[in-house]
Length: 427
Image 1 (tube, rainbow, N blue to C red):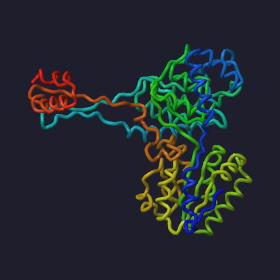
Image 2: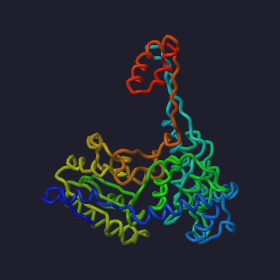
Image 3: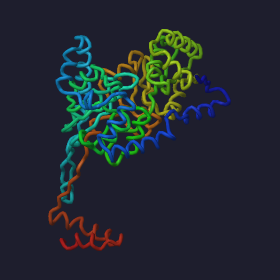
């Protein structure tokens, strides 16, 4: 774990190293993914069958390629009542939040008499990738599928790796609640390729969304353009800005909530209280000893964690913007002044009683967020990721007469006489 003090002479260089540190796989991953993508494009189901046998340890022809609607319904009906209620509450809140994101069509006539506007439509089909390796994430099913449904996507297809052919019933129950149309027992880069190109069994989609490991992220990167994607997501991360009035055990739990995801996750604390920083470090150590995911979290904290003491919390905010974190907690009684200074963050959690984990499940905004400093230019998953805008124009003889001569002049200046003629003949 890195300990930094903004008053130290070497702070700027050390912090710059922290900002620029890469936690994402590369090198052989890109080459391996290109091989997998090419194999799926050429061999289709045969490649999926081989890769699933090699990576997940089961034969799709035996365990079944897809999960039937009856199986999904049975998984939902078999849930503990409290757990089912929690999933349904989360689904309702996610749907309500995303309904407000739907854009309005536009249709107006300007001063020249030209009718202008735009119409929004959902994509025909969306593919959802749901991780199935280290853990099962029913919340990810809800966060990916519900915005697609709200957008009006016609077909929602889900792929998920199933080690030894097994799939968590919670994931199936979440898929049923969210209205997923198809669930396929394939994962990894090969599943992304199948969604992009289609195979004998899996029909291609227009957009692929959802988090995954380095191979999944690289496959999405390589296939962007064949299909749309939400983002290229990397390891999870959290930045917490906290004053000394916090309970250090609360802040330690918040830091570990991301560290337990993966050994490459990152948790960073900014505080203006050195004694509080030390207390949080002690609390992290104590909680790690009792945490079921302690081995993963301890590696992430040791390799990628940081505690940074700053002269004031105001001074922390430019540093936070340089990190452009996926998750940002402002653990203060009145966080608004600091929140006003935030320019780059995937999602911000305001106040002492808003842990990041509440956003992972039931708050409403999407938990699929930009990582690896991509919050500088990207946003979290939304309804807009499943929609596209078509503009339209309608001229009358009088409105074309008003603006057409300028178009003719510009077309001639660009050396495009046919462009000029197509307008001029109508004037």
